[in-house]
Length: 242
Ligand SMILES: C[S@@+](CC[C@H](N)C(=O)[O-])C[C@H]1O[C@@H](n2cnc3c(N)ncnc32)[C@H](O)[C@@H]1O
Image 1 (spheres, protein in one colour):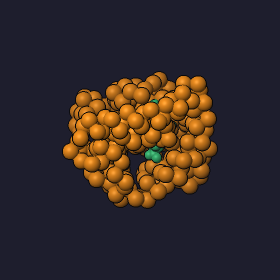
Image 2 (image 1 turned 90 degrees about the vertical axis):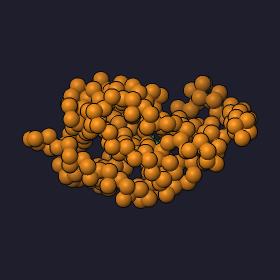
Image 3 (image 1 turned 45 degrees about the vertical axis):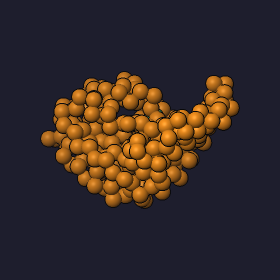
């Protein structure tokens, strides 16, 4: 089975070689422009399906209020602002995304969610949050992002740096399936296509291992089966405390 999987994955890699060349030549940058439109459509549907899970997760945001003042929240890889509706009233939101073309959709999400206070949108990578001071936020949120960042441990290290002591890192991410499952086979075979069509997203990441190794003081992490297609059905959801 492993040999078949590796052979099929190799074939898939050969088939996507023209896309690899396009990326090397810089042509892939064009896709970055249109990707937010794709994210907007996909996350709209995702949010509907995952609404209860998200609601349950973000209910715990209340545990991280500072003694005085509103909740200061940083969303890394905010995309089109799909999580805004779940944030508590008066929450001060700073958004970071490596794709500047998200801003147009963020404006629409802001208009729909007037219960929040928007601080700023910063174009930066999660691996380098130098725009945000040490110990300055109560909560960092990352949903469907650790699958596509270049360096998950670095993103987690940066999240920990900007969180105040006792602050929370909230996550909801699709992850690699159980190695004995058929989904695991298909995730590996289709990953080369998925990677290029979903802006560098890798569906075979064991992201929980990075979160467990990040050195948080407390961790609430659940493995769930999301009601989504087999490629992204296995999810992890929860929060970690600095
Ligand atoms: C699938 S979208 C998810 C958007 C949003 N978090 C949600 O749940 O709907 C992934 C987002 O992460 C952003 N992203 C990818 N790599 C990143 C990185 N290294 N740093 C910051 N943002 C990144 C992408 O530009 C994209 O907007």
